[in-house]
Structures are given as C-alpha cells and as structure tokens.
Length: 269
Image 1 (cartoon, one colour):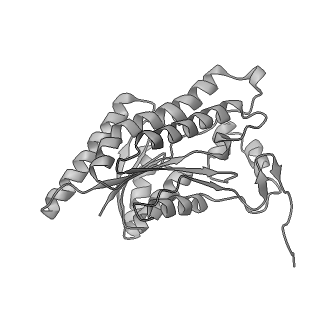
Image 2 (cartoon, helix red, strand yellow):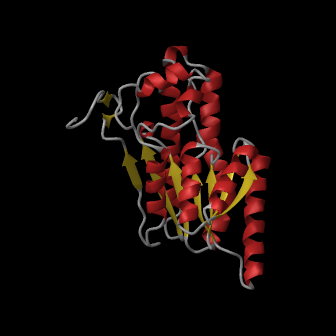
Image 3 (tube, one colour):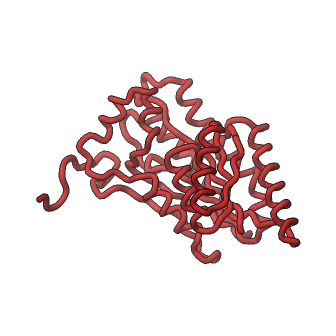
C-alpha cells in the first residue's frame, strides 16, 4: 500500500484529501499542528476501512519537518519489514498547508501578516518538499501536488500578501518541475478559486464569523473541500507517465477572481 503525506490535514481541503486518498488505497500520513484533530481524522479513516497515521508537524519549523520526514521513513521501513520485502514506497506528497491573514490594502499591509503567509505558504512548502523528495524519488513513482490558489496567478484588491505568497508558491512549482525533468517525480499544481471550508475565511478574519460569512453571501454553491480533494486525487492516480501540470478549478458562479455571480443560477422552481 503506497504511502501519501498530506500537510495541513487537520481541517478543510487537507482533511478531505486525506479521506479521499485513503479510499483510493493509500496509507495516508496526516500532518498538521493540531494533534487532536489529526487523531479524529485517523479514526474517521480507519473506521471507513482505510489506513492513516497521524504525525503532528509545524511546517514553519525545520526541526518539526525533519521529524515528519523521519517518521515517514520509519513507517515505510516498518511496513516493508512486516511484508517481508523492501520499504513500502512513498509515492505522494500533497503540500496543502497554507492560509491567508487579513484583507488590507498594500499601503496598510501588516508586515507580520505578510511574513506569516510567506512562512507557511512558501517556506513551509519548501521545507517539506526538500525533506521528503529523497523518499519520493526512491519510489521511482513520486508525485508532488502543490495546493496553491487562483491567487497564485491573479491579483485582487486587498489580497496583496496572500497573492504574493501564492505567486511565490506557483513560481516554486514551475521551477521544481524544470529541475526534476528526467527524474521519476511528477509535479502538479492545483489552483482552487472560491472554496467554502470550515476555517479558511474565519482564520483570515481572525475569528470574525460574520465577516467570513459575508464572503460567500449570495453565492450559489461555492466549491467544497471534497471538490478540491477530488481534483487532487485524480491528478495523483493518473498513470505515472502522465503529468497534470496545473488544474484551475472554480465554482460555476465564479467566472474570474473579480467576477462572482450572486443569486440563483439557472431555472428555479
């Protein structure tokens, strides 16, 4: 059973992706800071007949990420030993950990907020990718999925910090794909538009649920975490010679970053 690692797995897209990958036959290593949430997720997956292991990890910490890589290597070795063969292959990394803080214009931008967004979205992704790439390459069938955003190639007012961080992640993804050409590791970018999850907007507005809810007010059927997980799983389960460079996925109501239809869509009873 191949091993997949999902960062930012304690909620939202990360948790949905972990559940979906387990259903696809992966042993999923779920990584995030909140150990209690990870334990709940592992229980959900195992109760559904899947396989999952929780490894608490803070992607902003070199030491914590090194611990994640060590735990994954130990897991691969122990599973292989139990099967009486080589180490279980580590074939998939989903770099999902990230987030946004604030919606301030650049002229009033918080350096602390921008720094946090770069630390988590860009440097956190760098840390995890560096630490796990040797295991992915050793499998001879590795895949790295970068969960970025439409903000990674389109800017919008108030989104300077988040867009800059996601642009950085998109640049890293393209560069990594070039650098790994000729080696057995695919590099995929998944760019969701408007996704309604249980925490993203609430965290962005520091717990202000009213302001978070206003983002989605009147929008018929934003994307869900399961919608994005479906895209991630599809890219990861293509034949190994097929590299899906980028998927851009938006809800029907969102034609572009700045163009969102409000109200009912289509015939109404």
